[in-house]
Length: 420
Image 1: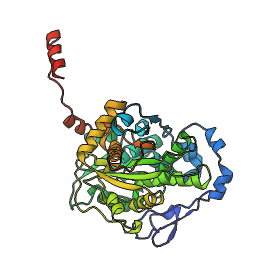
Image 2 (image 1 turned 135 degrees about the vertical axis):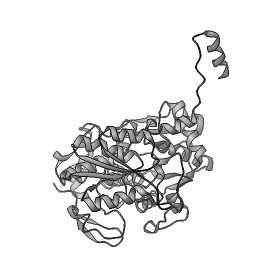
Image 3 (image 1 turned 90 degrees about the vertical axis):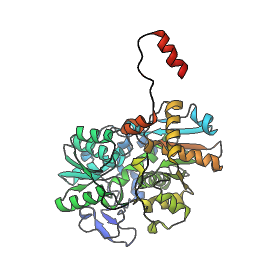
Image 4 (image 1 turned 180 degrees about the vertical axis):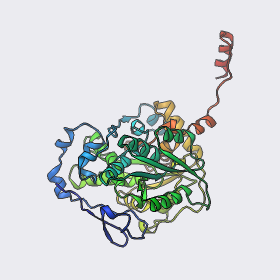
C-alpha cells in the first residue's frame, strides 16, 4: 500500500517535484523538500500491536520511511538502543528523580547518524545510485561509509581539514575515499562547498545527514522518537534535551512523536530543547530572538568548540528545528566549553556511559535548565547520548593526565595512590 506521495514539496515556495528528480527539478530556496505521508492509510497499515510483534530495531518502523520496495533496505542492526534510568548522576548532580539516557552509541557506526543514513543509502540503492557522497564533521560520514560498504557502494566523503583523526581512521578503514578540505571563507564550511560542486559535477548521490541535499534521510531520524514512545509504554516523557548542530536530530525526533500522535498512539509530545555550544549557537539564537523558522540566520564566525560535531554555522535544518521547538513549547540553551567537558566526565564516571563531547552536550543544557528552574525535579527527562567517546580521542588526551610509569614495587604504588 502506497503511504507517501511521490511529489516532494518546498515549504517556502510550494514547488512540487518528483522524488526521482529531486536534484534536477528542485527550486533554489535552499530548504529540505517535504515528503507527505498519507496518515489515514498508515492507520490502516500499522498498529501498536503489529509494531510490537517485530524485532525492536530501526526497521521495525519501515512503513514510516520513504522506501518503495522493502527489499532495498540495508540492514546492519541499527536502532533498538537502550533507554537507561540514571543510577547516580540524576539525583547527585541535578536532583532529578527521573532522568533517562537514550544511548545511541551502540549503533553500527557509533552514533545516531545511522538512523538517517540507513534510509538514505536504502533509497539510493532503490534509485540505483553508483557513488554516494557527503560532507560531514565525522559521524554522518562514518555512517555513510558503514552502510555504503554494506550495500557494496563507492563512498566519497568531504571533511573539514581538522576533523578528529579517530573519525577519519574509521572512514578510511571502511573503504571510503576521504577528502580533507581547507577553509577558504570565514564561517563557511569548505567541505560542504566542495561536496556540492562534486555531486553536481559527477552526478553522485548526495547523502549528508542534513538539509536540502537529500530529503529522504531526514525521515530516518524519526525512529528515535518512535522508540521512546514504546520504551515509555506510550506515555512520552516531559522533556527531551538534544545536542543540536544543523537541527536535523531535533526536528526528526519531533516528527516521530508527531506522527505517533497523529495515529493516536500517544496523547502528548515532550517539550524539545536544543542545546548548542556558545561558540556556535545559531538555532538557540533563533529561539531567543523568536525568529520565524523560514527566516533563520547563520552564525557569523568560525566556530571553535570541543563539540566539533555541532559546529554548524549554517544550520541546514534550522527551519524545521525552530518549528518543532515552538510546536512542543520547548526552548534552546547555549552552553560553555567548560560545562560540556564537565558533564561529559560526569556521565562517564557516574553512569559508565562514554560519549563524545558532541554527543553529551545535552547534559550541559540540562544543568543550565535546572539552575534556571525550568525543569521540575519530578519531571521525566530524556537526554539522548548521540555519539561514542572513541570518536574524538584528541579531546580526551587534553583532559586526562596519567601518573608516570613506576617499577613493580609496593612502595612506588603507595606513593602514586597517595597522590590521588
